Figure 1 (cartoon, rainbow, N blue to C red):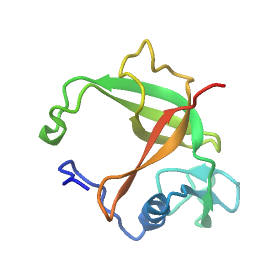
Figure 2: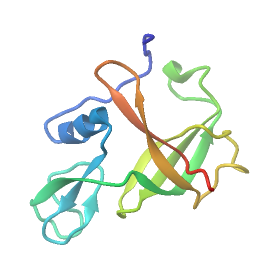
Figure 3: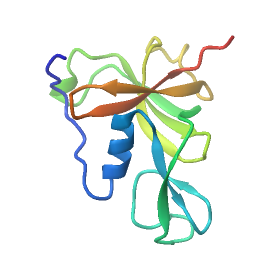
Figure 4: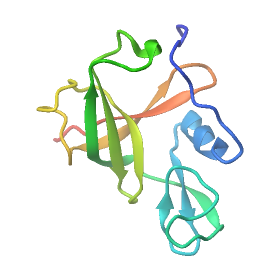
Length: 140
């Protein structure tokens, strides 16, 4: 494994279950035990009903692109030479949305489109860190 020079996420007690699940290759998202809403990003309260009763549940790891942008000029020097790349808001089948990268497709808004079905890819960038990215679901 080569040295990964881009910034890495910092896990804390609230986000650790998410990062641990991604490192295991099994995406888990918080779900409210009161209103059954899936919640992302990890937080202490349900944004719908304010319940503190949130449980980590496995999710399918499939969704659709809700919004996207193609980055040509990164604002962080660590990403210099990486562009162009796609940053997207993916709406998971369970209803919550995740900010992520879309890979395995040209970074072209004529190719990557809102509504495109995608699936998770687990990108192990270091021994300790795996990043959740998405790729288009190939149609049969």
